[in-house]
Length: 134
Length: 185
Image (cartoon, rainbow over all chains, first blue to last red; front, side, top):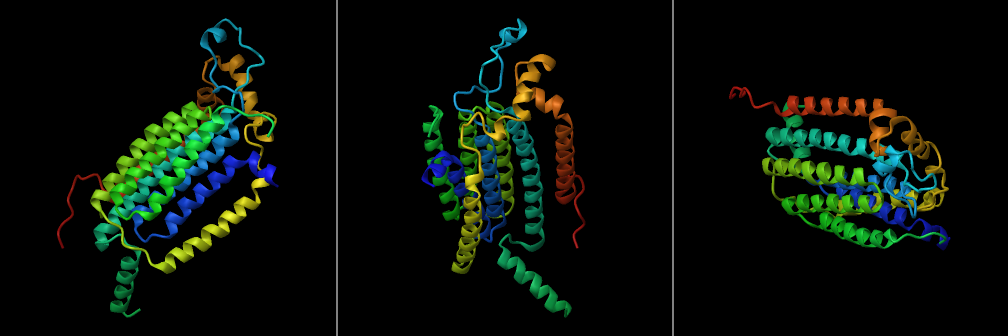
Protein backbone atom coordinates (compact mmCIF):
# COMPACT_ATOMS: atom_id res chain seq x y z
CA UNK A 1 0.00 0.00 0.00
CA UNK A 2 2.69 2.45 1.06
CA UNK A 3 4.90 1.45 -1.86
CA UNK A 4 2.05 1.94 -4.31
CA UNK A 5 1.69 5.48 -2.97
CA UNK A 6 5.45 6.15 -2.90
CA UNK A 7 5.84 5.16 -6.56
CA UNK A 8 2.95 7.43 -7.51
CA UNK A 9 3.59 10.32 -5.14
CA UNK A 10 3.53 12.88 -7.98
CA UNK A 11 0.06 11.81 -9.08
CA UNK A 12 -1.23 11.95 -5.50
CA UNK A 13 -0.07 15.55 -5.04
CA UNK A 14 -1.38 16.53 -8.47
CA UNK A 15 -4.80 15.12 -7.52
CA UNK A 16 -4.71 17.39 -4.45
CA UNK A 17 -3.85 20.34 -6.73
CA UNK A 18 -6.80 19.49 -8.98
CA UNK A 19 -9.10 19.41 -5.97
CA UNK A 20 -7.76 22.81 -4.86
CA UNK A 21 -8.87 24.14 -8.26
CA UNK A 22 -12.28 22.47 -7.95
CA UNK A 23 -12.70 23.91 -4.45
CA UNK A 24 -11.92 27.39 -5.77
CA UNK A 25 -14.61 26.91 -8.45
CA UNK A 26 -17.34 25.88 -5.99
CA UNK A 27 -16.50 27.93 -2.90
CA UNK A 28 -16.79 31.35 -4.54
CA UNK A 29 -19.69 33.20 -6.10
CA UNK A 30 -17.44 35.56 -8.03
CA UNK A 31 -17.37 34.57 -11.69
CA UNK A 32 -13.81 35.77 -12.41
CA UNK A 33 -12.48 33.83 -9.42
CA UNK A 34 -14.39 30.81 -10.63
CA UNK A 35 -12.63 30.96 -14.00
CA UNK A 36 -9.31 31.28 -12.14
CA UNK A 37 -10.19 28.08 -10.27
CA UNK A 38 -10.98 26.36 -13.56
CA UNK A 39 -7.63 27.33 -15.03
CA UNK A 40 -5.83 26.02 -11.92
CA UNK A 41 -7.73 22.73 -12.32
CA UNK A 42 -6.77 22.66 -15.99
CA UNK A 43 -3.06 23.28 -15.38
CA UNK A 44 -3.06 20.49 -12.80
CA UNK A 45 -4.52 18.07 -15.36
CA UNK A 46 -1.70 19.05 -17.75
CA UNK A 47 0.79 18.25 -14.98
CA UNK A 48 -0.79 14.81 -14.54
CA UNK A 49 -0.35 13.97 -18.22
CA UNK A 50 3.22 15.25 -18.40
CA UNK A 51 4.14 13.31 -15.24
CA UNK A 52 3.00 10.09 -16.94
CA UNK A 53 5.29 10.77 -19.92
CA UNK A 54 8.43 11.24 -17.79
CA UNK A 55 11.05 8.49 -18.11
CA UNK A 56 13.82 8.41 -15.49
CA UNK A 57 17.22 9.01 -17.02
CA UNK A 58 15.56 10.16 -20.23
CA UNK A 59 16.23 13.28 -22.26
CA UNK A 60 13.70 15.66 -23.83
CA UNK A 61 12.56 14.13 -27.18
CA UNK A 62 14.89 16.28 -29.29
CA UNK A 63 17.75 14.79 -31.33
CA UNK A 64 21.19 16.25 -31.73
CA UNK A 65 20.94 17.73 -35.22
CA UNK A 66 24.51 16.82 -36.21
CA UNK A 67 23.98 13.19 -35.23
CA UNK A 68 20.69 13.24 -37.14
CA UNK A 69 22.28 14.72 -40.27
CA UNK A 70 25.13 12.17 -40.35
CA UNK A 71 22.80 9.30 -39.38
CA UNK A 72 24.76 8.57 -36.20
CA UNK A 73 21.92 8.62 -33.64
CA UNK A 74 22.50 6.42 -30.61
CA UNK A 75 19.87 3.65 -30.87
CA UNK A 76 19.93 3.08 -27.10
CA UNK A 77 19.33 6.71 -26.10
CA UNK A 78 16.38 7.17 -23.73
CA UNK A 79 13.82 9.87 -24.43
CA UNK A 80 10.66 10.90 -22.61
CA UNK A 81 7.39 10.02 -24.32
CA UNK A 82 6.56 12.79 -26.86
CA UNK A 83 2.89 11.91 -27.40
CA UNK A 84 1.48 13.41 -24.15
CA UNK A 85 3.53 16.54 -24.85
CA UNK A 86 1.75 16.96 -28.20
CA UNK A 87 -1.69 16.39 -26.67
CA UNK A 88 -1.05 18.91 -23.91
CA UNK A 89 0.30 21.52 -26.33
CA UNK A 90 -3.08 21.36 -28.08
CA UNK A 91 -4.93 21.42 -24.75
CA UNK A 92 -3.10 24.55 -23.51
CA UNK A 93 -4.11 26.55 -26.58
CA UNK A 94 -7.71 25.29 -26.46
CA UNK A 95 -7.76 26.11 -22.73
CA UNK A 96 -6.89 29.73 -23.40
CA UNK A 97 -9.57 29.89 -26.12
CA UNK A 98 -12.28 28.64 -23.75
CA UNK A 99 -11.04 30.96 -21.00
CA UNK A 100 -11.41 33.95 -23.31
CA UNK A 101 -14.99 32.98 -24.21
CA UNK A 102 -15.78 32.57 -20.50
CA UNK A 103 -14.34 35.98 -19.68
CA UNK A 104 -16.28 37.60 -22.55
CA UNK A 105 -19.47 36.11 -21.05
CA UNK A 106 -18.53 37.51 -17.62
CA UNK A 107 -17.99 40.98 -19.10
CA UNK A 108 -21.41 40.82 -20.82
CA UNK A 109 -23.06 39.65 -17.58
CA UNK A 110 -21.49 42.59 -15.77
CA UNK A 111 -22.85 44.97 -18.45
CA UNK A 112 -26.36 43.50 -18.18
CA UNK A 113 -26.65 43.01 -14.39
CA UNK A 114 -24.03 45.32 -12.87
CA UNK A 115 -22.58 42.52 -10.79
CA UNK A 116 -20.64 39.26 -11.17
CA UNK A 117 -21.58 37.66 -7.84
CA UNK A 118 -23.92 34.75 -8.47
CA UNK A 119 -26.17 35.48 -5.42
CA UNK A 120 -26.90 38.94 -6.82
CA UNK A 121 -27.49 37.51 -10.29
CA UNK A 122 -29.93 34.90 -8.94
CA UNK A 123 -31.81 37.59 -6.97
CA UNK A 124 -32.03 39.86 -10.02
CA UNK A 125 -33.39 37.00 -12.13
CA UNK A 126 -35.89 36.11 -9.39
CA UNK A 127 -37.23 39.67 -9.07
CA UNK A 128 -37.52 39.91 -12.87
CA UNK A 129 -39.66 36.78 -12.86
CA UNK A 130 -41.80 38.18 -10.02
CA UNK A 131 -42.40 41.35 -12.07
CA UNK A 132 -43.48 39.29 -15.04
CA UNK A 133 -45.70 37.24 -12.75
CA UNK A 134 -44.23 33.88 -13.71
CA UNK B 1 11.45 2.40 -5.37
CA UNK B 2 13.71 0.99 -8.04
CA UNK B 3 14.78 3.79 -10.39
CA UNK B 4 15.25 7.42 -9.48
CA UNK B 5 16.25 10.65 -11.11
CA UNK B 6 17.73 13.91 -9.90
CA UNK B 7 14.64 15.76 -11.17
CA UNK B 8 12.53 14.07 -8.47
CA UNK B 9 13.97 16.52 -5.94
CA UNK B 10 12.80 19.43 -8.12
CA UNK B 11 9.34 17.83 -8.20
CA UNK B 12 8.97 18.20 -4.43
CA UNK B 13 9.92 21.89 -4.53
CA UNK B 14 7.47 22.63 -7.37
CA UNK B 15 4.66 20.69 -5.65
CA UNK B 16 5.13 22.64 -2.42
CA UNK B 17 5.07 25.99 -4.26
CA UNK B 18 1.98 25.08 -6.30
CA UNK B 19 0.08 23.91 -3.21
CA UNK B 20 0.86 27.16 -1.37
CA UNK B 21 -0.34 29.24 -4.34
CA UNK B 22 -3.50 27.14 -4.72
CA UNK B 23 -4.47 27.62 -1.09
CA UNK B 24 -3.69 31.34 -1.27
CA UNK B 25 -5.97 31.66 -4.33
CA UNK B 26 -8.83 30.04 -2.38
CA UNK B 27 -8.34 32.29 0.64
CA UNK B 28 -7.73 35.66 -1.04
CA UNK B 29 -10.60 37.99 -1.98
CA UNK B 30 -8.64 40.67 -3.81
CA UNK B 31 -9.07 39.70 -7.47
CA UNK B 32 -5.86 41.42 -8.61
CA UNK B 33 -3.83 39.24 -6.22
CA UNK B 34 -5.76 36.14 -7.31
CA UNK B 35 -5.08 36.82 -11.00
CA UNK B 36 -1.38 37.49 -10.47
CA UNK B 37 -1.04 34.32 -8.38
CA UNK B 38 -2.62 32.35 -11.23
CA UNK B 39 0.09 33.74 -13.50
CA UNK B 40 2.70 32.59 -10.98
CA UNK B 41 1.01 29.18 -10.82
CA UNK B 42 1.29 28.84 -14.59
CA UNK B 43 4.92 29.96 -14.58
CA UNK B 44 5.90 27.47 -11.87
CA UNK B 45 4.06 24.75 -13.80
CA UNK B 46 6.05 25.75 -16.87
CA UNK B 47 9.28 25.31 -14.91
CA UNK B 48 8.06 21.91 -13.74
CA UNK B 49 7.25 20.92 -17.33
CA UNK B 50 10.85 21.68 -18.30
CA UNK B 51 12.11 19.57 -15.42
CA UNK B 52 9.81 16.75 -16.60
CA UNK B 53 11.52 16.85 -20.06
CA UNK B 54 8.53 18.51 -21.77
CA UNK B 55 10.38 21.59 -23.01
CA UNK B 56 7.85 22.46 -25.74
CA UNK B 57 4.98 22.29 -23.26
CA UNK B 58 7.05 24.40 -20.86
CA UNK B 59 7.47 27.32 -23.22
CA UNK B 60 3.90 27.13 -24.48
CA UNK B 61 2.62 27.22 -20.91
CA UNK B 62 4.93 30.14 -20.08
CA UNK B 63 3.81 32.12 -23.14
CA UNK B 64 0.13 31.20 -23.31
CA UNK B 65 -0.74 30.16 -19.73
CA UNK B 66 1.36 32.67 -17.81
CA UNK B 67 1.26 35.40 -20.46
CA UNK B 68 -1.94 35.61 -22.48
CA UNK B 69 -4.23 34.07 -19.82
CA UNK B 70 -3.02 36.53 -17.20
CA UNK B 71 -3.53 39.48 -19.55
CA UNK B 72 -7.05 38.29 -20.42
CA UNK B 73 -7.93 37.77 -16.76
CA UNK B 74 -6.52 41.19 -15.82
CA UNK B 75 -8.56 42.84 -18.57
CA UNK B 76 -11.74 41.08 -17.49
CA UNK B 77 -11.06 41.99 -13.85
CA UNK B 78 -10.65 45.68 -14.72
CA UNK B 79 -13.96 45.63 -16.66
CA UNK B 80 -15.89 43.90 -13.86
CA UNK B 81 -14.86 44.14 -10.20
CA UNK B 82 -11.74 44.27 -8.01
CA UNK B 83 -12.99 42.44 -4.93
CA UNK B 84 -14.85 39.17 -4.48
CA UNK B 85 -17.64 38.93 -1.92
CA UNK B 86 -17.16 36.90 1.24
CA UNK B 87 -18.36 33.33 0.74
CA UNK B 88 -20.91 31.82 3.10
CA UNK B 89 -20.06 28.90 5.38
CA UNK B 90 -22.62 26.69 3.65
CA UNK B 91 -20.85 27.18 0.37
CA UNK B 92 -17.49 26.18 1.89
CA UNK B 93 -19.14 23.08 3.34
CA UNK B 94 -20.63 22.15 -0.06
CA UNK B 95 -17.25 22.68 -1.75
CA UNK B 96 -15.52 20.54 0.87
CA UNK B 97 -18.03 17.70 0.40
CA UNK B 98 -17.70 17.74 -3.40
CA UNK B 99 -13.90 17.96 -3.45
CA UNK B 100 -13.45 15.26 -0.80
CA UNK B 101 -15.81 12.93 -2.69
CA UNK B 102 -14.13 13.58 -6.05
CA UNK B 103 -10.65 13.36 -4.51
CA UNK B 104 -11.49 10.07 -2.81
CA UNK B 105 -12.62 8.65 -6.15
CA UNK B 106 -9.41 9.75 -7.82
CA UNK B 107 -7.25 8.38 -4.98
CA UNK B 108 -9.09 5.06 -5.28
CA UNK B 109 -7.96 4.90 -8.92
CA UNK B 110 -4.38 5.94 -8.06
CA UNK B 111 -3.15 2.34 -7.80
CA UNK B 112 -3.99 1.77 -11.46
CA UNK B 113 -1.74 4.60 -12.66
CA UNK B 114 1.60 3.62 -14.23
CA UNK B 115 4.62 3.87 -11.93
CA UNK B 116 6.17 7.34 -12.14
CA UNK B 117 9.20 7.50 -14.42
CA UNK B 118 8.94 3.87 -15.53
CA UNK B 119 10.20 3.37 -19.11
CA UNK B 120 8.39 0.00 -19.38
CA UNK B 121 4.94 1.26 -18.33
CA UNK B 122 2.09 0.80 -20.84
CA UNK B 123 1.82 4.57 -21.29
CA UNK B 124 5.46 4.84 -22.38
CA UNK B 125 5.86 1.77 -24.60
CA UNK B 126 3.17 2.24 -27.24
CA UNK B 127 2.84 4.56 -30.18
CA UNK B 128 4.58 7.44 -28.41
CA UNK B 129 7.98 5.78 -28.50
CA UNK B 130 7.36 4.57 -32.04
CA UNK B 131 7.10 8.22 -33.11
CA UNK B 132 10.63 8.79 -31.77
CA UNK B 133 12.05 6.06 -34.02
CA UNK B 134 9.91 7.00 -37.04
CA UNK B 135 10.76 10.70 -36.86
CA UNK B 136 14.47 9.95 -37.25
CA UNK B 137 13.75 7.91 -40.40
CA UNK B 138 10.79 9.65 -42.03
CA UNK B 139 10.62 13.31 -41.04
CA UNK B 140 14.31 13.86 -40.18
CA UNK B 141 13.96 16.95 -38.02
CA UNK B 142 15.49 17.12 -34.54
CA UNK B 143 12.33 17.93 -32.55
CA UNK B 144 10.05 14.88 -32.28
CA UNK B 145 7.19 16.88 -30.71
CA UNK B 146 7.08 19.20 -33.73
CA UNK B 147 7.09 16.23 -36.11
CA UNK B 148 4.17 14.58 -34.30
CA UNK B 149 2.24 17.84 -33.94
CA UNK B 150 2.50 18.99 -37.53
CA UNK B 151 2.69 15.71 -39.40
CA UNK B 152 1.61 12.48 -37.68
CA UNK B 153 -1.22 14.15 -35.79
CA UNK B 154 -1.71 17.14 -38.09
CA UNK B 155 -5.49 16.71 -38.10
CA UNK B 156 -5.58 17.30 -34.33
CA UNK B 157 -3.73 20.55 -34.85
CA UNK B 158 -6.15 21.58 -37.61
CA UNK B 159 -9.06 20.87 -35.22
CA UNK B 160 -7.30 23.05 -32.64
CA UNK B 161 -7.16 25.90 -35.16
CA UNK B 162 -10.92 25.56 -35.75
CA UNK B 163 -11.55 25.69 -31.98
CA UNK B 164 -9.44 28.84 -31.62
CA UNK B 165 -11.27 30.41 -34.59
CA UNK B 166 -14.67 29.53 -33.08
CA UNK B 167 -13.60 30.98 -29.74
CA UNK B 168 -12.42 34.20 -31.39
CA UNK B 169 -15.72 34.44 -33.25
CA UNK B 170 -17.61 33.83 -29.99
CA UNK B 171 -15.74 36.59 -28.18
CA UNK B 172 -16.31 38.99 -31.09
CA UNK B 173 -20.04 38.24 -31.10
CA UNK B 174 -20.32 38.56 -27.30
CA UNK B 175 -18.53 41.83 -26.67
CA UNK B 176 -18.39 43.26 -30.20
CA UNK B 177 -15.41 44.61 -32.06
CA UNK B 178 -15.93 48.16 -30.75
CA UNK B 179 -17.04 49.49 -34.14
CA UNK B 180 -20.58 50.75 -33.66
CA UNK B 181 -22.02 51.88 -30.35
CA UNK B 182 -25.50 50.68 -29.48
CA UNK B 183 -28.28 53.27 -29.31
CA UNK B 184 -29.18 54.43 -25.80
CA UNK B 185 -32.62 53.24 -24.72
